[in-house]
Length: 334
Image (cartoon, rainbow, N blue to C red; front, side, top):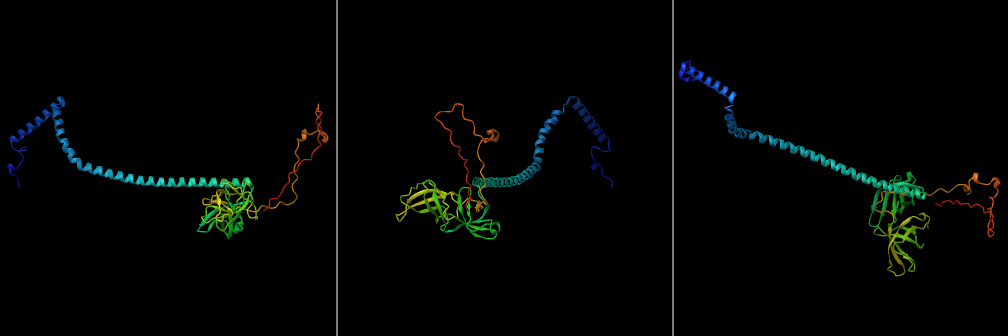
């Protein structure tokens, strides 16, 4: 069906008026393009139109920009959360490693002190580690990781780098039980280093001090005196540090003095200990002691006595030759 003439576009109308109008528009467009190319007359028009249209563009782009900003912010927050969690884990791991290194360094210091004690005293000892602690109301014991299979025997003295710790009470195949010197049922013969007074140190009920309950009233005992093992009874070798007197007062009976002693050993902080073994008896006669004297190349020939001084003093007389002293070698009693 053919379109009516009045419904057709006026610009492309089939009559002469439409064609003339098209030619005029084309000519005007060409003139404007030429003038804008040569003189830039329409630049200001475009600039002004851009200033008017630009806010409309910004308003139209606000939703997409907002969505983009929110997505970036959410992604950054999630990334920061993950990174923060990872850094927190790294910090905890670093702190754990640092604490472990500090503990290992402290353990190395304690082991070095134990080895120095062994080397300085030339003892036959066995290193053991504390794996259990039993600090009850009236029971103060430690469990060690060595037992009968390792040669541990009941009654063996136990020390640390600072002093006497206790003695082995029970021995199992792979573990052993040590009674501390602060146990109320433990007694230890001691001697006061300064005065030489011998007495017996007992454990106390509080578990962190020793008691000297039977000191004579006339005895010379002072605060700060050091206690050593006396060797009586044959259980503990003499000379090991036991503790230091912290207080001295009359006993409740009024017949003796009573002293409180701080143990020298780290009773509640010891992780590694030494078990003393009996030293072997020396076999055979003592080894001969080398005579002291000048080197062989400086000795006079034929074993003759050295010549006297050219001008001897009239008051001095040659002394008779003394035999070379010999150092006795004694065996260490177990």
